[in-house]
Amino acid sequence: MWWMSAPARVLILGGGFGGLYTALVASRLLHTRAEITVIDRNDYFLYTPLLFQVAGGSLQARHVARSLRHLLPRSARIIHADVTAIDLDAKQVTTGSGSFSYDFLVLALGGVPNFYGMASAEQHALRFKWLPDVFRLRTHIEQRFAEAAAEPRRARDVLRTVITGAGCTGVELVAELHDWMHGPLLRHHPSVPRDAPSLVLAEALDHLLCPMDPNLMRKAVRKLLDRHIDLKLERFVTEVGPEWLKLRGPAGDEQVPCGTVVWAAGIKPSPLVADLPLPHGPGERIDVTPSLQVVGHPEVLALGDLAACPDPVGGILPQTAQVAVQQGPAAARTLHALITGEIPQAFRYRRKGEVVWLGRTGALAEAFGLHFTGLPAWLLSRTVHLARVPDWGDRVAIALQWAKALIASERR
Image (cartoon, rainbow, N blue to C red; front, side, top):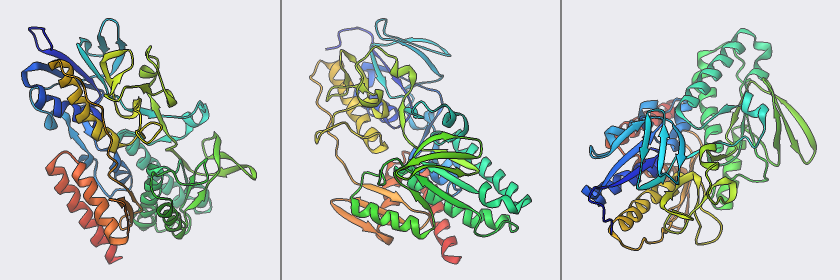
């Protein structure tokens, strides 16, 4: 039982999927038993699984970014600031807006791009993680098309775009960029040769990394190849330059001239979290118990991309939005148990299937032990994302935008 006369001070670091859903459910469960404070570098929640559609222009940024103050109850305090230090012994967090003490801490800061120590990639490749990254990518590609229009002889090299990493993010992004380049961008730049834009998807392993049935992934490969997207599997990046990158594969080294390199090859916890004196698992992720408590610090919970949460079937859970969405309410229930003197229950992840988008009218889906392609997959993938978007107004706006894009594609 929480015996303090004052409410427990619950500090949630991060306003992404894990932090948002922890705050939403904890506010309902704890009522006056806790003062909940959410600290995030942004003042909005970002629906990251649809960022690739903002990159290709299928959706506007306002459809995937919603103010935290709009989503959270008034009882939750929201601090817009960068976290600069965490003192676990003093139970204090330092930010650009001051220091905050806590009784219970939830680490839900997410991850940062993992360049695997490659300085040249960090310098020259474009990140694809946050909303400003999407704006930067769109501006960069538009500038490349303007250069190609001015110098058509260089168009093929200038308009070759390489995406590194063939996980779901890389696969969906390469398909979306294909639609954008071979649709609106070519129409707006009639002097650019029709066959000049090209896309390369590079992956160090010999298969796509989406956690789906291998048969569906083979279909994804065929659909990408049908669009003339160059798949370079078993190729890992060794160096990135301003207009090229080097790949190493079974046949040796290869230098690829290109105008754009987009880094989607993995994420890792932020250095702030990685440097904490806590037990870390694979990929510098923090070890947690089944109830999402940090080993050695039961008053600290960790979830989402930075937590090495055990998977009942073996290993640790993947760094996906689906995991974080389920961990948020579980973390809130653990907080409730700790504050009311109960025994926290173990978090049980329920895999609900996966969806992969392959352009405006294509998708693959796996749910309820069944595989879907064509129109059923298209409808299921849209339904899954609409169900996860936390604001009803955004759901309606996104659905209308998708309908508009579908009608436009049918008219081509």
